[in-house]
Image 1 (tube, rainbow, N blue to C red):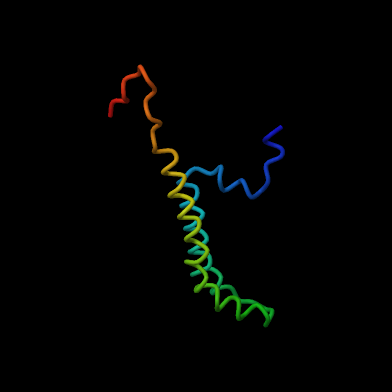
Image 2: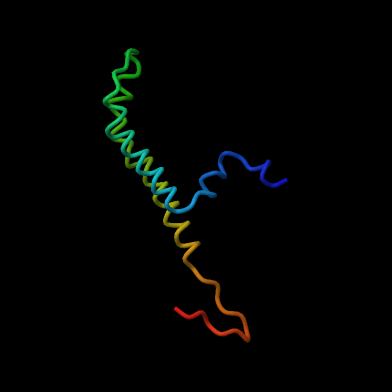
Length: 89
């Protein structure tokens, strides 16, 4: 069965385009505003919390690129086959 053999890496490819935009927004806001507000007890995690805002765009951009790809894939109409009328807009 194909559904059971799907890995967790294929999950983002199955999301609709707006789902990828939503994930990008959550990742960006979480890293930019959420992580720095956490009060870390462990001293080793404090530098990571301070560095998280600089990684926010780096981790959100791939999700936005995936959303653009998914939107393009759903928006492109296949060319008409021979003997068929072109689709009306």
